[in-house]
Amino acid sequence: MIKREAAAPARRITAEAAAAMVEPGMWLDYGAIVNQPDAFDAALAKRVGELSGIKVRSCLTVRPRAIVEADPEGAHVHWVSLHFSGYDRKKHDSGVSHYMPVNLGEIPDYYRRFIDPVDIVVIKTCPMDENGYFNFSCGTLWHHAVIERARCVIVEECEGLPYVMGAETGVHVSEVDYIIPGDGRAAPELPNPPPCDVDRAVARQICAEIDDGACLQIGIGGMPNAVCGLIAEAGIKDLGIHTEMLTDGIVELYKAGLITGARKQIDVGKIVATFGLGSKILYDAIDRNADFDFQPVDHTNLPHRIMLNDNAVAINNTTQIDLQGQAASESDGHRQISGTGGQLQFVRGSYASKGGKSFMCLSSVYERNGVRKSRIVPRMTPGNTVTTPRTDMMYVVTEYGMVNLKGKSVPERARALISIAHPDFREELEREAYEARMIPRGFF
Image 1 (cartoon, rainbow, N blue to C red):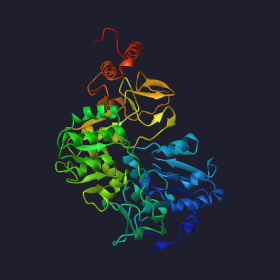
Image 2 (image 1 turned 120 degrees about the horizontal axis):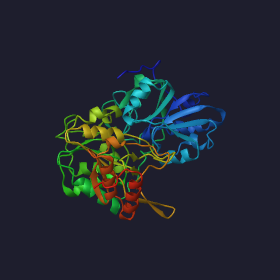
Image 3 (image 1 turned 120 degrees about the vertical axis):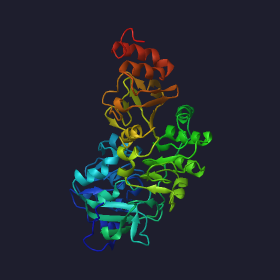
Image 4 (image 1 turned 135 degrees about the horizontal axis):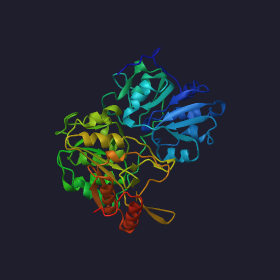
């Protein structure tokens, strides 16, 4: 890690004074998730009309951004996201927010090798601790790499964030140019809806494949978190955690005493994640708790790191899969809905792990405008982004079953995926597969 030295000792200034430093054409970085600034954002929004060509890089926006709301046509601010939240998606639909394709675990390297230096980075942090560090809270991610490449570093102190333990979890005051007071609000919470019957049906099948001592990655969404609930019921024990996102479901397993990390090969005994987003229960659990080890995203997400733990199990969602096994998990045609995130990297890392398994979950159908459609399709929706290629796909799970596509030919894959599609669509899928010659005549 390269340590950045500030040009002069850090000064405490107001958010308004910090926002006054922004000039037309600058690149700003707002960090990610709970670390996006609020006081600075509000102050800058008051100046939007007098600025032009401002570019802001961000990720997973969890609160409305004042500068975006103040510039609804995007005439002054170009908003770039590394992964869409619901808010980012809405702004993308209105032409204001734009997606940058990334594998999340590679982002520190992007900043260090490919992205031009940032003019100003503003990161919301915990207040400075007794050792002179501003803790990133539950958002270690790539923040230190951004700071290394920034011409000006501003931290926005916030009393409402949990203080986390781990490597590179903060920035030292010697690397900071300016300190501004935050609004003190608690970390934003992500609603965790209860699992539905389909979620539970998928989770039951996955749980049957998880052994004591497995090392889990849990993705975002109802299905992966339903797995956590059923693991607790099944009494699977001695689990390890090496994940990108820390969720409420993982915290529930921790509180139940089912996570020890004792059988891990790296970070033994630690619950490893690069960011957390959930309820107050999660934030209270991680605050100054050394059982939780927050690491940069290139430690959590790069496949050659994931594979170092035996029996790695990756559990992720997708929204559409074709009969060859390609998964589209981030777009609806040309409409970006989320991002690649860490899905592909965990699919690859878990497969490379000794005894590892990767599960791709989806409900068999969805409904739009009163019309029910199959998520398993002969071919992708035009414009859809393939998040996980067919060559990487292992287990695919719907409420109607589970199939393993490793070692299967295209006809075998098509047959296998049709078998776990909704029964109402199987005949149509088979007919289209024959017509496209994915399943040849006479194939059994």
